[in-house]
Image 1 (tube, rainbow over the protein chains, first blue to last red):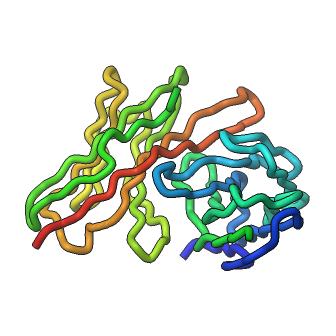
Image 2 (image 1 turned 180 degrees about the vertical axis):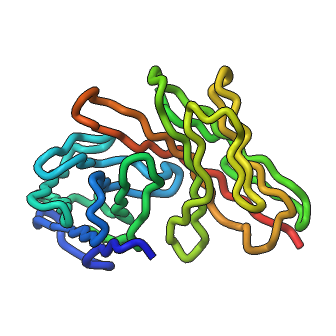
Length: 111
Length: 119
């Protein structure tokens, strides 16, 4: 198994609270991605990183921010959670010219 | 416009038969990569097969093959001899370079096709 861990695996939070999801890798891969998966929408890219401190927005970045201060960690923050951000969040890592390996996912519920 | 289009929300196939899952893509890059992933009901994402844009031969991995038609911008997944365990969601994805020099590769997924294998 690729060395990628997401935490927490499940979280229930209240509307308006900040939430941070963590993706940790032990593979030293350059690329890291955050996706959300919702029925009927597949996986939609939120933000991605192509190096330490190098990040860019994806298709659905509004309401989310990311940080990557070291190679192994990529943090996704919901500054003020809303019910529309209830979803399953996947982190993925990828080396140059290879496939992406996915974490187990985080199920986030905003009530 | 969608970069990855999977036009079949759901498909059924008889066990032991072959099935083709469609995927079309849109990019202006010359160098890109195409992937297929499987997501069973347990939720994990499983890599199946990869095709590079410069690869002249279609990729194959066991019972999976990728029918790559570059001019049509299609990358269909063919599963031969379907098994009950093939029942899952299947996602097509594309890697493309967004920022020259910065190495900013985005990885975009389609909405998926739910495959059901009938005994």
